[in-house]
Image (cartoon, rainbow, N blue to C red; front, top):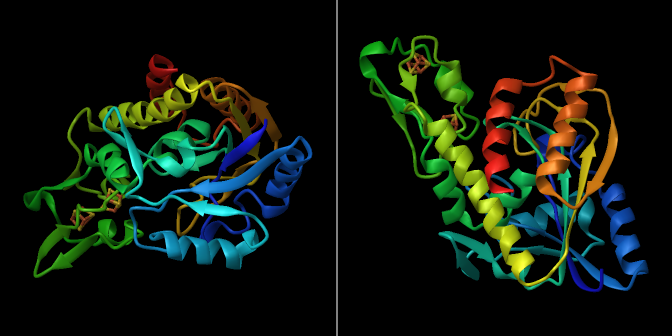
Length: 292
Ligand code: SF4
Ligand code: SF4
């Protein structure tokens, strides 16, 4: 890999500092690229939810203070995008000469598993693109079934669900449609439209393919590394990433997002059969097969 090499990486959050991909591991890859004559830089995009990676400035500060001070870190400028199939892909990423998709393989509150495909799709598009992926699976509220138990309010880590004068209100602007509030509701008062999960999974894959096609069409190589260590129930974005659900497996490398995720899922399942929700993961991967 020669020229500017983008390493697409989720740098973690306060809740995942111990379980995310560690800066020492990233350094090994950065040093290898440098040794082969490439110029590596770490890249990520800002989040929809308003925490430490919400803006470019906040993310850069977080990265600097949490292990990545000695790396070149670029956080995408949401206004500087190329629109491909309806998704705004960050130009700073597309301008690179090659990409290493460095992904932590672990659980996820919505897709149940997150690895290379999620890193590519959700992780490489701007906030509008993220909204597009999420908007189809946003929750709805049925007042007639609500007992006002408050479980949904507790379930939403970002405070998008509130109880206001006896009414449950959902701030849907930046809701990720993760379904945690729906799953927590004991009465079915919080619900999602049938088929909305599948529709959102389609969009995850559609966005990932749009990113990949841009690299492919430009003849730029893409290489994948999945880290199967500290495999937590929830993803590195979660306030509480939950328990480690599978013993460490190691690292996988490859040249296909689909194959590396398929293999990661297979290995986790073999090692820890009750670790994750395989039915939902199967649905996501079945959809992924149509795209890759
Ligand atoms: S789906 Fe529910 S829990 Fe998830 S972000 Fe939206 S409001 Fe919060
Ligand atoms: S969890 Fe369900 S029943 Fe409880 S307050 Fe929320 S919507 Fe109402």
